[in-house]
Image (tube, rainbow, N blue to C red; front, side, top):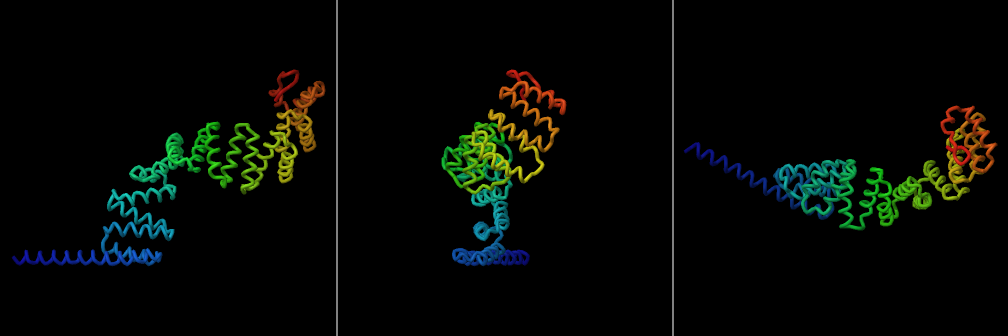
Length: 340
């Protein structure tokens, strides 16, 4: 009887302690809610943590302290609290939802997909799975998912853009065009998107549209780097705006004295545009830089052939091959002349 009475007393003390702890947890929780509503988040966070100290399974306190830390931009702390709550209750939808968002923001895409698949009823779960799949280079899954997303929300510019990016990454360039078009219509502020759209058209040899979107990107603040100006310069040349193109390309050449590649590419661009006189001008610049530049002499010979001066052109090509025997592999009969 004495042992039974002792055990009863011990259990009574334990129950009383648990009851007291639960009451203390509720008191601190209510105080924390008041501080949270007043946007005194640091104080609220401390009070919520005291509530948890008194009741380590206080789900509501974990949720609220997580939200408070998010409000303070302490995302690491928030993730820790939501993760602890998930350990205590793997069915808690609020913990699952917030962990899905946090893992996505932290670029932990596999974890984001894992929790998004558990996030039943979450309106953005499908989008997060698709966007995460793109980041994990699973482009087919990303496209399929994002097509469903854009069907439900035709104003999601980033989703349209990501579909376009996925098609580019899969080297299906023509398929990317309508999605870039939709994205850049929905959001005209993204100068990177505009520039990439220009590059997409450039890759497809649609230089008119490439030039248009390069210019739109510049108007929206895209930095005029050498690469940007070079691409825009050639787009100008390929659309017949020779002066605009040369101005940009010669400015780049001035920054890289001794670099013959720019002049060689300009000469080739003009040749492709059948503007043989302008091509010859740049062949001459190359030969002034290096009188033994066989490639430049060969290019000049081609220009004279196309201009109908066959004897002169053929003689220059022959001389070029003597200077640079590797050019012999380029020599072939084509319309009475030679072709590159």
